[in-house]
Image 1 (cartoon, protein in one colour):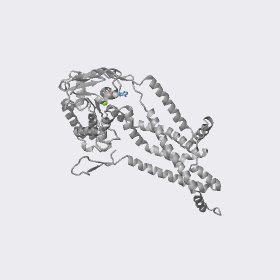
Image 2: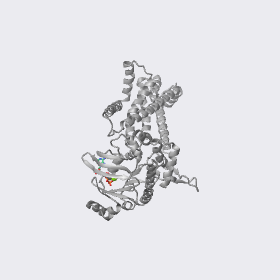
Image 3: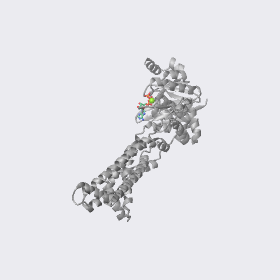
Image 4: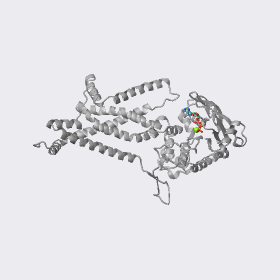
Length: 245
Length: 259
Ligand SMILES: Nc1ncnc2c1ncn2[C@@H]1O[C@H](COP(=O)(O)OP(=O)(O)OP(=O)(O)O)[C@@H](O)[C@H]1O
Ligand SMILES: [Mg+2]
């Protein structure tokens, strides 16, 4: 299998607080991996380490076999290969929907504006937001913002997309539209690493589910096993708590 | 010249006689404060951007040290110019340049220079505050699509920061219109200086300075209005058009009170 990313013995500490300890996993092309776990277990920190928004304390992140913490691959180039979708959308407030999806292509990928706009339009179409290209972020709803954020990430044509609780900041009635887009992306073969509390999504869409607890990956298996027959006591306790809600 | 001491005839007399003087004074005041504010703004942007450069995990020791020294020097500049009166700065710079560097500055040039670096000190902190107040998520989103720190600054953060500090910048401009009056101590022929000579010639201080007062107020009031209008223009339309809606090409969605 074509491993896009492999993490080995990754650690991250904030002062004395060890948030990630000895994380090991890999993600292959076309895989959809969901990360679940209690609040504070280090899920966001893991994603943020993967695209270097936080710098790992130790360990290796191999991108196609090359350790990006060691080699002098500039962070900017590597980051364009992994797109990121944030819980708080983080659309560029000063730019229109279209320009949000264009600016990176032009400034980072050095594409000309016309072809950047064409690409942007394709992805905005894909997430159903092509009507709103002239709107500013504060003029659209949360679900629409998140769909634009997904289009913005896709427009950079990354090898994989990282999602950090993409629906957690949304009103319940807006969650569906974003999950639908994500489901379509998964089915189209996009490699995705998704931190989520949407157990239905994880069960239905994921190829693998990783359960994290206090900075370690406790269990990493296919969703059938994680949800129906988890091997670890902590996984069972977590799922019980979640499903009781 | 009015025969008696009556108020209104004196005001009219002085205005008729000295309006070219007032006009030249007002124009100089505007030139100095406008130029000073613009240059000060750019100084502020440059320093504000420098002072918010993040130290990365891979920044070299020498770069870090150089950056610390630069930051310290900039901080000295900011503190000194914010911590002393502009009237004193004017004296020190104007006479200091003459004595130490044998540099005899024209009062107008010296005036613009002093207002610029004085405003620059204030604007540096205003811009820095503006940059720091932009949501951290904006930086992270920009980094996540591979933009460098300078690209992020130029295309994402500064446009938002500058929009947010426009009111503070207008305020600096208005303060400068008023505070250029202190430049009369180095004989800059701004409005206050002109008024003083008109008043001295006739020993009519109240009448002259009443006119001066009105002129200052008209200038600051007009400038405030114009800049406010400019801010509204910059915000762009509060309405966006639906793209490619074929049945109703001019279809619009009005968003009310959403921010
Ligand atoms: N910049 C930081 N400085 C110090 N501690 C941090 C920092 N970022 C995260 N932490 C700590 O790391 C731990 C894990 O945080 P993280 O955000 O990764 O959790 P999470 O699993 O994403 O939780 P949630 O489900 O609430 O998003 C928390 O205890 C948090 O307080
Ligand atoms: Mg989180």
